[in-house]
Length: 541
Ligand code: GDP
Image (cartoon, rainbow, N blue to C red; front, side, top):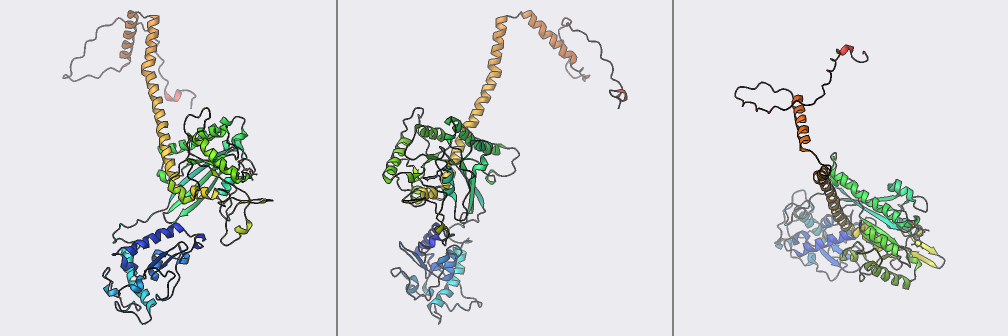
């Protein structure tokens, strides 16, 4: 039996349990499979998931390493189960000999527990249940087990570990809490990230070594055998520069630079590994931090320009500085302004990352009625020590004030938990896919641009340059006699420089008689002195 409490265990994956439960449900419903699930019951309600089944069945489908609380010995099968209204297939099932779904193999001599088919062992139902299942499970392992090759479905191939890369960039005005947000977003208990030292993110450091402002975490998805490498790039606030567009250019250059790096890797002649093996530097999306209370035209303009290069997720930081009423009004106002900016220089839609509706629902994003609702978040460098020391420990950033406490992951206070669920779990594949699409269109336009450049060059060489020469010649005028003499002189010179042709066999056609030309006006140079013998040359060694 699993209850919501189990879901808090560190390695417990509710979604995985759910997948298995669906699988078991399927097994129970299929007449051809029923035998393998002989004696299994499944009961679901809003407080718990309960399955009663033979031990081997349970260990196959719900290995205790993955679903720790699942394997509890409930005693003999006649013991009342926690789900009174479930169909008790074990108790109501006909004796196995009449179960025509599946022909049971007979027991071998090394199986003392297994009695004659259909006869209950004296030790009672519990014993019978285990022994029958041992035979069933061996057979069913061949049909349904993880290595099965004989079942109605194709086997699930063994997967090898592969890495997938996600890179976010956090952009916004200075002092909005970008660095604090990154820390709160990706830290876990016992592994709190030090994004960088100092209270402010220097522009010079970003220009020189952006990698030093990048935080990396990684984790393994055991089910799909994927190692997620997750990086979040901090940037200096655009209020640090007198000219905001200088900062914009720096960030855009960084994003393009990462795309260019990947393009170079793709096209590299010396590449030894497949692209999938290489670290992907491309930026997936941008978390754009919006100040609380006021959305300025410069914020919209920055978001718009940046959106041309990477999709944007709008996030209002320091949400604790707004009252409930202010926060609600501001959320709607920001959504409306993003949909319809009405700022000079913004002629198109702002490129906001569009999460799938299902994904938003899974992540528990509250309001989906508005088109582009921003996330209103609270972040903090302080955490609840009490929850950090609890068992299991919890990472719980909070901001303490004399009048109360604003909790970053409390759904009543902030959307950070939903944002974290979205960006680090539910939408990972989606984000990855959008990045690849964005890159492909960037690559097409970049390489297309190069092609156009090459076409212009060749047009210059073969059309425009000759045209200019002709024009010049036309303007200055040439005497046809001069041109003829020039050509003759040069043809003659080339002929003399050419080595004399070897004697040809008689069958070869007679040489073409070339019209005798007037002697060229060639200045005869005195013959060069014969080269000295090697030992007398130069410096004498
Ligand atoms: P950055 O310059 O954008 O990276 O901002 P920092 O992360 O350095 O944060 C600047 C200040 O804002 C720090 O004093 C943070 O403690 C504070 N701060 C960060 N997040 C929040 C928040 O959600 N609410 C409030 N009230 N202050 C915050």
